Image (tube, rainbow, N blue to C red):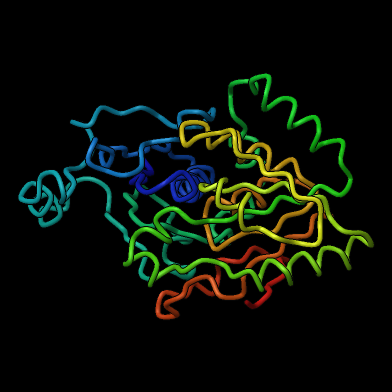
Length: 289
């Protein structure tokens, strides 16, 4: 088996699935998603069940013991060489050892780069289509976006990047100057001001504070339980202005258009010690604050 430890919010879960799925396709081994991280005490819940994924269900008892659940059994299993080899990402950037896996493995990490799975992009994009049809409100937004030749998704990430001092110091938020420059670039590319469809975990803040030389439509009706609907709408836009967020990364990456323009912040982390030089997908435009 290829066992992937799933943790974090939806964007991180999608990276983990994509890497596991790519390795499953490469090796011919079934992919098992280890969901034991998710308990009521965690901020995020498991969110991949809205997609039709190639996941082989396995009872927890059949999975290798994890160090956070059964530390002694985990240590003993590793000493005795039982079960698949546990491999953790060595650093935030692309790890060739992960890409080179050719047999059973148990993986843990965030794996935030398309370099692990770009070769199977079409399969992964199709599997990240929600299984349920959009409700009436989302269907109306989807039709409006699909009919708009100047539709540009813009994502503002706040939430714990603002409220949690540790996250604020590590991640930071994109500045007004970044969004001004990103819209100016889109205007140059399109030959006209874009029509912005703004998405955020804090839509009220966006309504009150986002001031750009473009038409701005704040798409704020989906709560956290329907964040996958925001991904569907973002992916339907022609072009994208993303934040330093794995969620908006996927909103742009899921757009299959070959001619899409994606603008991303040149600095992904406020704390540069956490930089990942491989976070930006091929062809994306990086703009500094």
